[in-house]
Image (cartoon, rainbow, N blue to C red; front, side, top):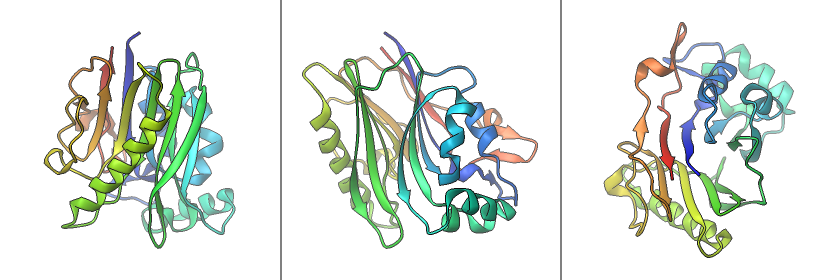
Length: 234
């Protein structure tokens, strides 16, 4: 079976440059518009949880990374008063995996790969028939790529614990590491060119493809400060 897999740090639905408005719905509808099989998202505001499945028409696997005292609906309302100013301060943040509805999750788990003062970094994973898909958002510490590298290895160890013999392993997300900064990952397909990657072990994978700017440009600007990355597995 061939699968189209995407990863995108959706940046809370903000545009680049920032504006006061939020465009999360447009971003989610865009990334799911041609019916990919798997989409891994990072930096999703908590208020989006109840909307992602409807906007994408995909199954949702969700784990929060930054909780806030505000109820998600209120936090979302406050944030949308000035999206570029408030961002995750009152709306929180999460990772999400979207799955084509024909893909049945057999197990869902997550682990903390580091815990900062305001936000924990996690890796979430879902086991499908013959496959494990994991989504991470690692720390980006200027001048200290070893921090993100250590988190990546923790994510890999966790993900491998879910695999059964012969399973394909897909690790995707915002690694906050360029290819030369990544730890040694034997058996995996080559990473992408930037800091967002999808790497695959146990199956053939196409070369990662980065969306051109025009594919995520709307009238208000460019969706997110990250470009989606995609590849085909199998």
